[in-house]
Image (cartoon, rainbow, N blue to C red; front, side):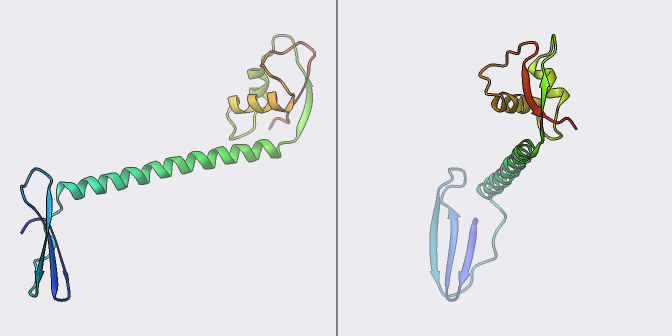
Length: 136
């Protein structure tokens, strides 16, 4: 018998291929006796193992990204804010980079500065007052 075999008390169940390469399976139930130990892993089992490993890796990556996002959010909400005046030639990118918070991407900080100052666009005027996080 090829495939998977199981023994439970006086019943034995075997999963075997009816045709080796078409992937079809059938169950055979035998009363009494014993059935051999599980045979070598079939390609179907390898596919399940690969799928489980890929899913586990995906969950780890998603979890790490969620943790990083949460850490950045916490850093933004706990940062002390100061008021600055926009200087000639400064962009929102420059200001966000200058007043950066560790672990928070510059683009995310730019969005936070826009939100704190009720800005719809990233356009700045010389002398404009902005609330920004106190630089580290």
